Image (tube, rainbow, N blue to C red; front, side):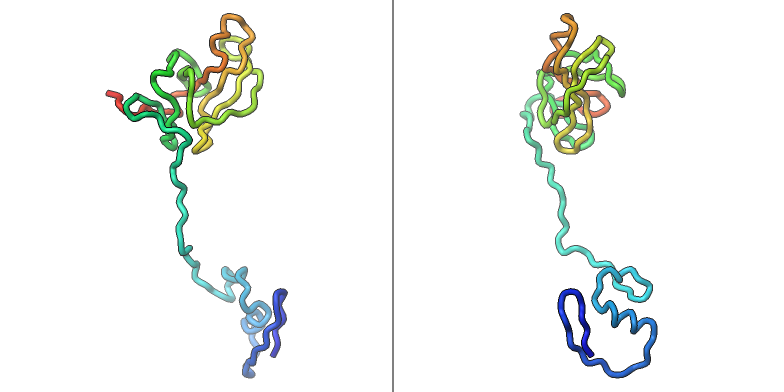
Length: 167
């Protein structure tokens, strides 16, 4: 008997036996992996030989001798306490801190938003490791009294945790 599949042709001798629905299926699809879940052909699930895990490699590590803020979701370092400008900001999920600079953070496209202090051009910022939106970056302030915020970062407390040297 000769089997022809999409990849190649196989010649196999099969002794005569009674024809059943199962033998018809097995003749038509002898090694088809898509039939693994079929009620006609049961194959136990196979485990992968190597389990791949994602390592926590951050772009920047802040010095362990300083008090730092980290992402609450993946513990990637975000900011040094020395870069904190103000704790009196409000985010969409509660209190937020204003930082002079941050690390391990990506920036989305800038857009104009009306915030509590007026019209600003802001860009959402997210953790580079776990991709969680953390807050925003002030790209441009339209009111002169708000110009000090330009280039600064807001991170909401709901997304960060204190690390290293806090009492």
